[in-house]
Amino acid sequence: MQRAHTDTIMQVIGYVERNLNNKLELETVAAALHYSKFHLHRMFAQTVGLTIHDYAGRRRLTEGAKLLAFSRKPILEIALESGFESQQAFTSAFKAMYKTTPAKFRKSKAFYPLQWEIRLHEEVLPGDFRQEDICLAGPGDVDDWMELVGFSVDGYPCLDEGTYLENLKRRMSSQEALILRDGGRAAGVLAFWAEAGSVEFLAVHPQYRNRGVGKLLLDKLQNELLCGREITVTTYRAGDKADTGYRKTYADLGFAEGELLVEYGYPTQRFARGPRAGVAHD
Image 1 (cartoon, rainbow, N blue to C red):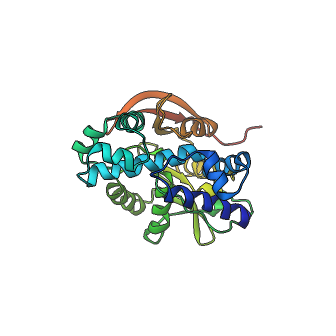
Image 2 (image 1 turned 135 degrees about the vertical axis):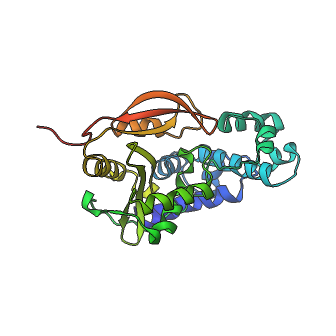
Image 3 (image 1 turned 180 degrees about the vertical axis):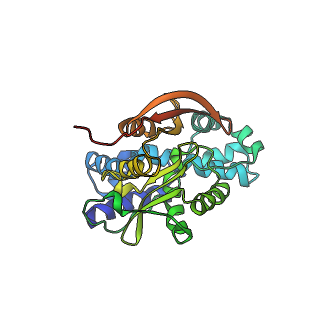
C-alpha cells in the first residue's frame, strides 16, 4: 500500500476519533479533509473493511458501552456524549449490536468492545506469502498477536481480552497457535483446538486482507496439521447487524453453514469446511 494512501486513511481515522461525539457523515469527513467523498469512501472501505459510517458507528457504541460499564453517568448523558441525538436512538443502535439494552448491559458489568481504533503500518511491501512462511506462535509473539485482536474484535462478540489472553497462552503452550509474519509485523494469526478441529480465532491485519493470508492459515491448519480433517468455526447468524462481513468471508474460504448456537448468551452459527479443502485437484 502506498504511503500517501495510508496517510489518508489515518487522517480519516484521526478525524473520526476526534469527533465521535458529533454527527459524522461521509460528506462532513470528506469536506474536512478536502477529498472527494466517493474516492474517500472507496479507499477507506477497501483498506479498513468497513465504511466510514459503519466504523464511526461501531466506535461510538464501543465508547458508549465503556461508559455504561465503568461510569455512573445517566444513559441519556452517555447517549449524547456518544454522538446520538436522543436516548431512544442510542438504545435502538445499541440493542441492534449488543443484543441487549444499555440498562441491562450496565447491570451485567461485562464490557466488551465492538471496535477499537485501527492503526495502520506506514508502508507494506508487496510480495507473495507461502505456507512455509507460517510458524507456530510463542510467548514472543503475544504483543503483536494482541494488536491484531484489537483490530478484529468486530468478528468476536463478547470477547473479554483478559480471558482471551489466558486462553491464547494455553494454545501457544500446546502448539495450537499459528502466525504469519511480514518482517517484524504480524500479517495474520490463527488459534485452534486440534482435538475438536475448531478454529478458535482467526485474524488478518487490514492491510493484508486481500493477499490470501486467511486461506493460507486455514490450509496450513487443515491440510498439514489436522491431516485433512474437517474444521469448524462459529460466527454471526444471518441478518445480524453486528456482522461486518465475516459470514461472507468464511463462505468464500470454503465454509458451509451448520447448526445455530448460543455462545456466552450471544446467538451464533457454526460453519464447517470439508476435508482437504483448499487442495487443488486435477
